[in-house]
Image (cartoon, rainbow, N blue to C red; front, side, top):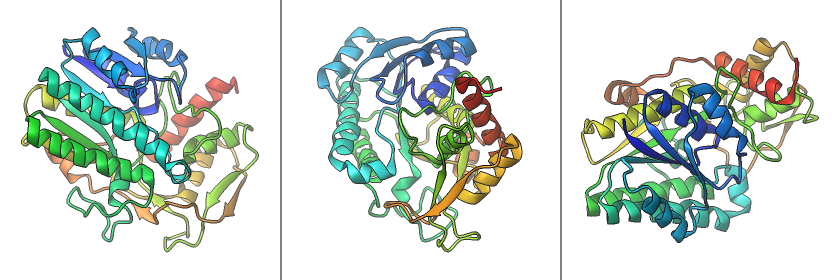
Length: 340
């Protein structure tokens, strides 16, 4: 059993990963500033896994908070770093806030690893590092091109910082470049619950179906795709969480082939926005009110993963479908809104 620090561990992906870690027998310490989640998630994690992780409320862009974490828990075996602002569109409007939050927290964590000679760091990266890839599907060797959004740039810079830190200080790290996480835990205890107006497609879909939003906006129908809407690789959040467990155990068991490894996490299949809407309507029986609007700044036409490396080297692959994700997301939405 290892002791793992999970930053942003009450967020969407973080909470699902905490569940997987605990169910595998690991001890988890969560730090979260609750800027995009609620403390209730702690009890929901306990309901699923039977145990409550240690929780610390803290802002990781404050240096003293980070050093205090490591002083309080000197026996950590690894860190999974989720805590970051994550919306492409918002990052275009608030670039400085994104750089301050996403970069400083990463640097402070890596400084603690260096100073305490700790190992085993997993970075929550993103397929946005590839920008609009010239060739699909996207492999880990696809060029990292100039970022379209400040959010994507923080992930690129983050990976560069980790690469150089690993070279200088000889610790082990993995970056997981996810495509588009969707869905919810099948128990409907945890799921995506953005504070305020959703910035991602699926919670906007479920909130529209639940009557919280009047209409769903589809950003552009003039992309060069099969139905004119943008294509993404939508991966079920439980599959994604399991990949973090596999990656951490790879580091703990010293199975990594290099000090710094990078893996794409996706299904390998791209779905258009309209296909996501149709999948939701099929599993829910609901008809969505949506309209086509102008394209959104920072969005690429298409992005989906080549998952060969994750499948063969990491030893992980997805098990759930887009329809599974839509059904779980709708079950979660109905539960939190008390809809029968």
